[in-house]
Length: 260
Ligand SMILES: Cc1cc2nc3c(=O)[nH]c(=O)nc-3n(C[C@H](O)[C@H](O)[C@H](O)COP(=O)(O)OP(=O)(O)OC[C@H]3O[C@@H](n4cnc5c(N)ncnc54)[C@H](O)[C@@H]3O)c2cc1C
Image (cartoon, rainbow, N blue to C red; front, side):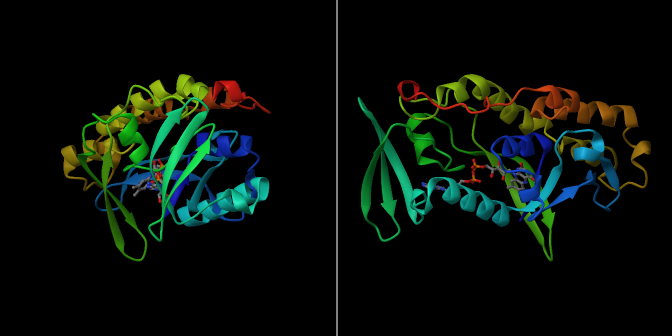
């Protein structure tokens, strides 16, 4: 599946030393981002990336190729032994010296791995999240289905979890990351349910069942521009603000061991 790396995401990769020279080998710099109605006519289309005035491009990239690039980079920097595949994390225990992750391997063996910090990036069905927030309601579907067309049409119901008040539990997650991002990301998750980037397609659907000749007859340009400006602002890629923002992680920053 191809995904878009918006300029704010490309900025983070750039700050990590994964620059345009590397991304250009696997990804295409997109010049335009467009949403179309049911008959393929534009509902919204506008320049993105360098062409729109961002300091970073917008890339269209195959998810698998991006993952392989990141894997190669981690192994190059930390050594091939740093990545263990075929393992599922099932839970964790905080203790006085750090944190222990519970692992189940593909062949059914169980292991415990002790460390200073556990960062969980295990997706929608995360057992770590379930342990940290045991009273969380189940994942919810807001009613939207995203369609992506390759040789055939794929449909993805847009599920998400309710936003959580904290990402921390003892040695699980990073305090600086929590302080800087948790509140804003949680607000964005809730916002995206009702007025995310695709909500304008809902407006077009209400007005003309998504079938249109000219979007100007359905939603005036000023309204469309205001809608996309609000989305960019909320998602952190309003052009001027992003171009002027200081890096999320200060250059050369390290996590002091006593603070993890
Ligand atoms: C159709 C579609 C299109 C999208 N398009 C875009 C786009 O264009 N641009 C964009 O920015 N976002 C896009 N997104 C959203 C984006 O894919 C998600 O926000 C992102 O993948 C979430 O990342 P994640 O690391 O939280 O979870 P995931 O990407 O789901 O990664 C979780 C990883 O953890 C692994 N895992 C799961 N359970 C365990 C376990 N117990 N132990 C160890 N590992 C585990 C999984 O195998 C997986 O590799 C799209 C999503 C969909 C569904």
